[in-house]
Amino acid sequence: MVEETENSIKINLKRVVDNSYDVVFGANIFPRIAREMKELKPGHKFVIITDSIVKELHGQALYAELKNQGLNVHMLSFKSGELQKIRETKKEIEDKMLQLNLGRDTVVLALGGGVVGDLAGFVAATYTRGIPYVQIPTTVLAQADSSIGGKTAVDHPNAKNMIGAFKQPIRVYVDVATIKTLNEDECKNGMAETIKHGIIHNKDFFDYLMNNINLLLERNPAALIHIAKQNCIIKGNIVEQDPHENGIRRILNYGHTVGHAIEKLSKYKLSHGKCVSIGMMAAGRIAIALKTGFTEEDLKMQGTLLKEFCLPLVIPAEISNESIIETTVLDKKTKDGMARYVLPSKIGAMCEFNKEWATFVDNNIVMDALNQTR
Ligand SMILES: NC(=O)c1ccc[n+]([C@@H]2O[C@H](COP(=O)([O-])OP(=O)(O)OC[C@H]3O[C@@H](n4cnc5c(N)ncnc54)[C@H](O)[C@@H]3O)[C@@H](O)[C@H]2O)c1
Ligand SMILES: [Zn+2]
Image (cartoon, rainbow, N blue to C red; front, side):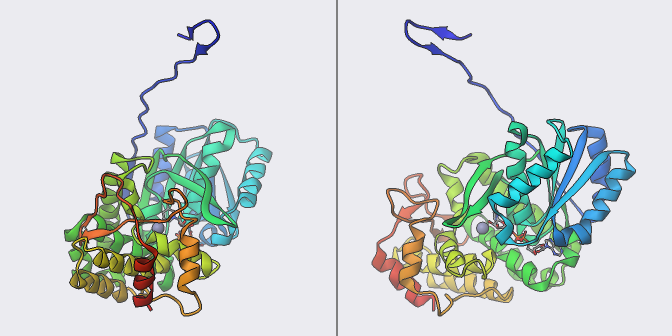
């Protein structure tokens, strides 16, 4: 009931929202996805949003499965790459969806890596004020990280992920068979977030990675399913506690303060995973300097595991410490114009910092850590 006082009224919109969703793991599960879309009927029309590379490798197959089930399905794609994760691409997709007369009864199937997931999720968040979307991640990074948690966004020339929305998918399908076609570099790139999950939340998982490097490098399906599932459990547990990143969710940004700065300064030529890898080395050194409990030995183990997956441990020579520090101020965790860092207390746990889970660090300490990361 609208409450009324003399010069104002109150619209009561308090409500309990259930955004829970299932994450399904398997290999070669496109037929299952199509079957379940038919059975669950989250909408009457489906639009696969993907990029130019994934469209050819996997998009046509998913399209055919959905058609086989007699579903009304379209497929839209954009040129692959981070440079396309921008408002202009979102607009193009929306215009095409409008031309196809897709209305509120449409479901977006985001098939691809993190770029597709972030962009297609953001389209779903705003198209006719919001339509459901399903994530079908096809990179190690997307299966480990970006498909869980409901963060969607596009980049702005000034900063990554600057314009976006929280929009939870209705379901996530992790098909590790799609990883077979991924190139070596992208595969290793995706391992950075996986290793991050071990460090921030689960020492056993970190040890599993350390002990199964070869299986992972061979892309053994069972090992890929195991790590995808553990990644999603770790990220899911953190997101459940803090869906909108007001506290503990910040720990997922381990390595990202310096990482995002390097990514931007490299003009996005250096991949996200590689930048996060370097960022974790710098953050680990800040943790040691601040005596959080994280030790030289921990840092060494972190470096060893990152190196096994050919992830870089040092800042590219052409990027100066000063430019990194300047750029970190644009980071999302910024408060009062100062960058904040999330720091480990050991492998498997992060510092609480009075429930803020992030702390300001003196520029001299950051400078020292950056110097050591060269
Ligand atoms: N939303 C989140 O919580 C979150 C978290 C982490 C990262 N991200 C975002 O994710 C993005 C990076 O994701 P990414 O590394 O997956 O990049 P990406 O989506 O650009 O994929 C990397 C490359 O691999 C290709 N590709 C994808 N799947 C393939 C397959 N199965 N076989 C062959 N090639 C394939 C793509 O076409 C692309 O060229 C960044 O924009 C980052 O900001 C988001
Ligand atoms: Zn990341």
